[in-house]
Image (cartoon, rainbow, N blue to C red; front, top):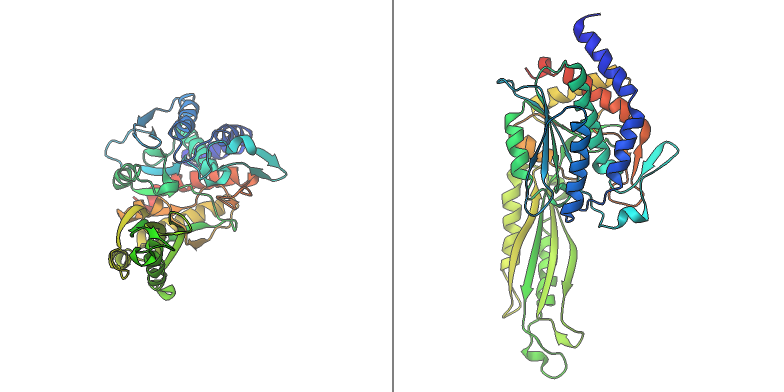
Length: 390
């Protein structure tokens, strides 16, 4: 057995023997409320991971963020001019503080449940154990960097520059979002822009002086009809008005109204034109004496597969096959931080985490039996990455 094969076998054996410890760390992470707007909770998850990694002699750097969760960066191996392999994951979830008390981590049969168990605390555990395996046995063809960010579920408003900076330095990226229920990884994602439009009208008594009022709700309703017409299903462009709010009372002509808009698109080249069309509708009012503003709340870039990303995907598929997994690529209409890394030109494969489903719901689950083999697949892919991405 060659030294490289011996190292590979040591890593695979150690990961195979680590499932109980993996589940222990996962339970600790899931049982911490870490809603995107709960900075203390999101940071506590990071501190738990840092303590675990520190216990294995891995240095962790904390990158302070004022408004949302801090970012944590762990590394194994000196750079020495060798571009690193980047593993990513986010610590925040969509569930408000208090959710853990209602439904803490549990295992029922072959599945684990709890807030964020698949999306994506199991991916954080996977990245951490892969990092420890290489710290123990060596063998990586490049330094390994694991980035744990804190606000992906709200479009990474503070993490994006940290992610983009790390990606520019990296040779390739594995983003450990949950593997699809099919067992596949994600090779393409839509981009998304999340916006809020606020409309101002003129209040008036709806019975006494109706004619003096200017309804912000009526103006918003007209805009909604126009925004929906921007949808182009053949081009992969959709506009959804997901939230509306307005009015003062039932007997008042509405002086204000607002809506939140979800735009999804396939190609980065389409982004500016579609956003421009949505903005033009927002800023053009047909109800006299009304006005409106449009604000972008957050956005993700699309993940489009380049030739280099296809080579990385093929390499990962072969690595997964080596540990007994059959993996294909599939497209997702959802967004992720992988769009940022792909947009700066770094080959990226997304959803390399353990397999799960029903994300963002009380039925979210993790396939417990996928944790070890998915970690092994990533380890094998890392071991051979010097060949595919030298």
